[in-house]
Length: 309
Image (tube, helix red, strand yellow):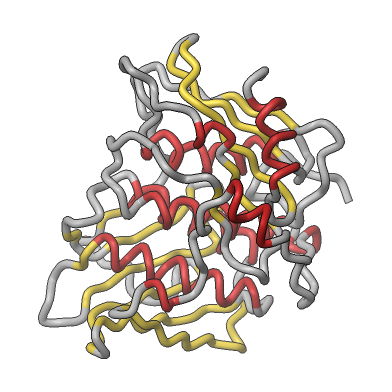
């Protein structure tokens, strides 16, 4: 089957999935020497938050549209202040209108905390993708065991799409002359599509908890947990932050995660990818989407490849 440029037309049949076997863990010494603790998929990192997922098994949805729209939703929310509240939200991608994502506060509330919306979308979608379960669904979002919001995954034309909801279609460029550059790593290993999406979404979830204009510092890698055989590595983490502006801000990383998936589709290859963050000709930093979990040798190797792009 031809690998199509468009998200819209790519068949769900091209999706492949990870086996249940967890990847081999790097040695403790190498982790202690190079890596900080990775962002964790476990809800234990969010002790106040819980989610209950109610799939509608007899209502399948287009798997790719579900992943694309979830990525767009998380990007849009991630570029806002996670501490603020938003009215009900309605997400769809104009290029992938088959699936709609609605985020509704529990009445009588009329708004939802952006951070909570991010957690509910991410953990719900990651759980369903991990189960290979692409169907309509309702995610009940709880905070301290109180039902506070819901996320509804539906086929286009089904369920409520009230006119007072915020509709997010195409995301606009960030401005500032920000333009990330992408490249495939030498001898890049293939990554399955669902894993690439969930890994990118996890990075957005991780960074959206910080101020979007804060300077990126301290992250060496993020990964969505042992079920997903991929990581985002930041080779420049051990280097001093730039002394003068412009700086690498979290919003640039968040937006680039979405652009990375577009790049993958346009080049018809889902494989290990490098990203350099630039404003004009000014190099701000780099990130790499790699297969597996990084160890000391991998970080050193990727460091050299990233800074030359």
